[in-house]
Length: 290
Image 1 (cartoon, rainbow, N blue to C red):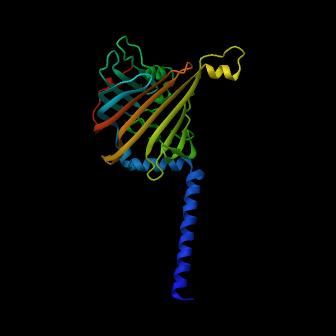
Image 2 (tube, one colour; image 1 turned 90 degrees about the vertical axis):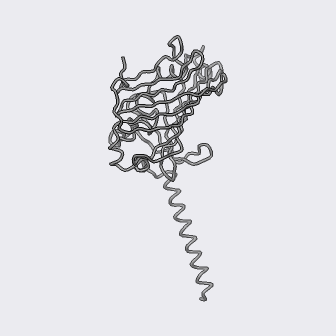
Image 3 (spheres, helix red, strand yellow; image 1 turned 120 degrees about the vertical axis):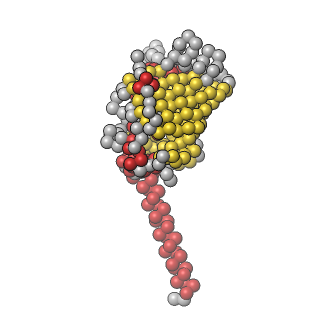
């Protein structure tokens, strides 16, 4: 066998090995990952165990742009502040629009509070939804890794709550999908999405269908006609490392409500952080719920 034949044979074996390795990796990614593997890789993407454990509180300040995308129109810029300590959280998205001043959500342990932010102290559609089903806030999901109460930071407490659902195509790219099931019931279906390369958490999707009642005859069509659909999307991007932790600097929060009449309201909060303060001393009043 001459040198050219040996090189050709070697190249074929190298190509075959690469194909087999690629197939094995794809098979592992498509259906054989355990939720514990995703969780550990995600935690590693944030920082070392020592760096994560060293953060007791966090303040994130930034700017936000509020847009009404469907069911109205308008765009206004405002300010955003997230304050968190352990399982406590306050998220403020503040604008100075006519009659409407933004959102304010709070969590203190298992207690939650959603402020009425219209001039008459009524809540927005988003606020009203969270008031009726505070699951994203109560479970510590809202705000993702920005919050010190992000439930995935406690790997022991999260056991049994995660189910790996394979690779899913989202916005044209493959992401690891992990379903989240809390101990307390909710109408919401919650799926988290992680980058295959880094295992950074880049999106959480919440969906729910609520029936206002059953029509005459109680058949499926009448139930569907009385159904209101909800969708919440959280997207995270532009990750940067500070104090040994890699966190997103961009947070996009979107709420959609589709009424049984066909009317749809879709609003978006597009937030960019300008300052992150880890372990800043916090006043307990930040989390007081009366």
